[in-house]
Length: 638
Image (tube, rainbow, N blue to C red; front, side):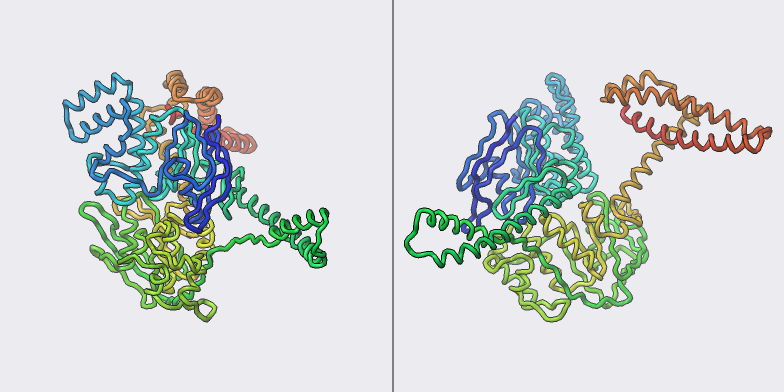
């Protein structure tokens, strides 16, 4: 089914064209990632498709049965209304019933709860209510009766995301979901949950995101806005990069060929008399087409990062027995660590466990409750904070940069003026005289990064640096940080960014506990999942031992009920059959293992028999371990 058809769409802001004469189609089930540099028009295109903005020219047709839902970077709320009222804004009987029931629960109103239960029963709304609760719990949204105006920026973003996901559940069967940077302000567990949620839901998706792992997990096609055109690529981000490189190479070869033709044709044009024959007129017209092609430029300007780092001495930062709490919430309990030159540390943990507080304490912007934080004399912090640009009044970009310094020293010697330095950060001369308030979110982030590097730091502290940055800028930032000789401390929910840059992690586990994990984020998640599996397996086996049963006997206790329940939960026929086979195989393997163990301990076996039995025991033990883990995986569905 055709959801959207667009032909010849054009949009400009003043003299700046965003895209020109682009055409595309979106079909049911498509999952598309839209990428481009900041300020190119990604958000504008989504707003045009949702009807919130109009194009300069072109046609946009949306099927009458399709509901369009847009999740924006800067969501709008009714500030005086509660979180609950904003989330359940949709006029739908089930939504109304769930809202009344949730208010009654929140206010502990027994009469309201009874009436709510009755309304929910009448509408068969409990499945929807369960889904709503899952969304609210996973996005850590509580205190539903509080007004929205009291929320932080991250909380507002999560409430807007919950509202979008809940509303599409009650929308028409055919929904086009458009999401503009949905992973900003989500911790990694929330991002992983959102990946699974979007993959399970039958939605057609158009996504703007800088998170490459999220993009690869959710989308099957990539669209890129570049030089006013729209390019499409099938496959993941890595394949897109390969295909784009091949396209640029092909375009450059075509331009080079046109230049050679142009030189020959230019010589012919100069020799021609003023009077033209029909034949020469045709060749003259063709000449202007060749000229236009030959004078094309493939501008692939990239952010250039170069910094003259302040000298870093032998002593960096020492933290000794540091304690910190907010009321009854412990942040650190006796934290000890000494930073070394060139360290690259990632900081991870759920929202609200104290990561940003830790960064502030390290820079002595916040005091510790007790303990010592000693900073080396040569340390110059560069703080790229979530707070963003800080300015007292609206001013032009060039004026803002000059409040820090008139010139910037380079690593290779010499210096650049403020205007020249801005050009390295892709602020063209006319853009430098734009007011700060008129910059896009990504442009503000780029300017913030510039002001951080202006101080020549040797200890970079990056708090969610990837939010609002476009993918090309992120790639340059990653390459710069890879070669940066100073210390780096990164708080980020961008798993790809962390994997590329950090050597080890501070994992904030809550209750003041911080684990120093030797490895990047992906390695940590593998370790974490292995531990969870081992813990689950241990719990099951321990429960069996307490009842005096072997693993096989434990599995045999309720085989038929287990299979029936598993089928209810959606096991495929193949998985059901696998589950049944495991129930038969595991007791047999356990029995054989016990028999061989008894035979081995009898003391009557020859050397060759002992060797043979030992080899078989090793095989059985290995098989049992694999099969028990698989049985546990399938039984988790029960």
